[in-house]
Amino acid sequence: MKIALVSPTWTKDLGIFSKLAKKRNSQPPLGILYLATVAERRNHTVEVIDSEVYDHTIESLTKYIIDGKFDLVGITATSPIFHKAVLLAQRLKSKKFCSPLIIGGEHINIFKKEAFLDCFDYGFFGESDFTFDQFLKIIEKGSTDFTDIKGFIYRENGCVIQNKAADRIENLDKLDFPAMHLLSPGFYKMTFVKFKRRSYLPIMATRGCPFKCAFCSEPLTNPHVRFRSIEHVVDEIEKWVKELGVTHYFFMDSNLTLNRNQISGICERILNRKLKITFEGWTRANMVDKEILKLLKQAGLIRMSYGIESGDPRILKIIRKEVSHEDMLRAFKLTADLGIEPACSVMLGLPGDTRESVKRTIHFVKNIPQISYSNFSIANPYPGTEMYEWSKIGKFGLNLLIDDFSQYRRYDKSPISVNDLSPDDLVQLQRIGLFKMHLTPKRIWASVKMAGFWNLLPLFIRFIITSINYSIRSIRFASGKDPN
Image (tube, rainbow, N blue to C red; front, side, top):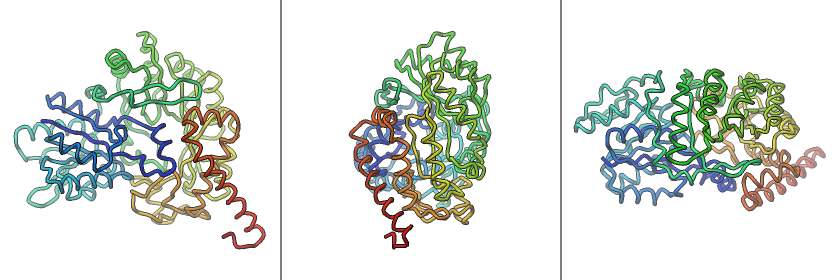
């Protein structure tokens, strides 16, 4: 069979932030690359279509799939872009495209048969690496008996059937490496402050996360942590270095240093094999020390990102971040002192947030000298998170105003209000926060290196206007005048 595995675009809806997001966050669709390997192993021809990279619209993507005469089409989608998966499937059906359409990804993992709309023929939820192989075996035989496939949704006699959940894959070494050879690595680039822009590939050493952050869906969808063997991870890196010539890797693990023995072993193998690579990843600030960071740097670590989330200890407690500001400050200093570029994530509109707590967050982040640049995103109550459930009942001051996931944005728009902060307040404070945090010569230069001058200029102008308008409103409010 000729199979297409499709990832829809996601940056086009970000308004003034679209160009910046596309430049900084182009990311290979790792999930469907694992499925592509499964299909190739069964001697099928597979094409991975990353719509973001090829700048596809729904119209151009529909035409491409029809013209390609694919026998099977799989689409992956998170909740904010699920509507694009639906629109693509509906367009294909309206054009009399007769090949089966499969839906997978985080949205259907959470909503399952509730998200299995008429435009889809089959659905996968949970870890599908093994169940996709089972599905292909049945299709190859011309059978329609899907009763034994776990984590699978289909129709029988007009009724939607949702099978039992798929088993978690305990031994990750049983998985073949993802089909990176189906990508054009030159499309995926990382930008840095201290280092040259470079092509990269994603890699995962673990699956799952044991922590319970209220804004994250992993406590529900992937709480059980499993680790690949050290050899398996380094074998994959060595394969892509030799076959594709890629020398930079982004570890997609939720916590790169969660298992100290594993990451230490990976570093030691990289050094022993003399692999000339660089890499980066995320971890928690209380899970690093000088010893492990030194080893990571020797093996090629050039950037490490830590989640700050909030500058208010009360908010950190509400969202169960379980990392102190002292640990954060220590981690940023250690990282920078070793010549590793520190990065961070920050949010506003978190459960319990107020105007004052957001101001404390802005103050906290802008006064960490090792940070050269920072995002400052609006926290969205994504389905599958405690924050989503809290926002529906008003807990911690959250109020969900828009239950249309296609309207969820981390920038320039908010689907919630929280305590004394309206959606407009959150947007204004986001712009002010980004402006204040980056308004030093060092950070302006870092931002230009990361994003490019012409991408930043319209944002800079918008932020100045927002800051002026916000100041005028604050003065009018303080004087008792109508702030509008």
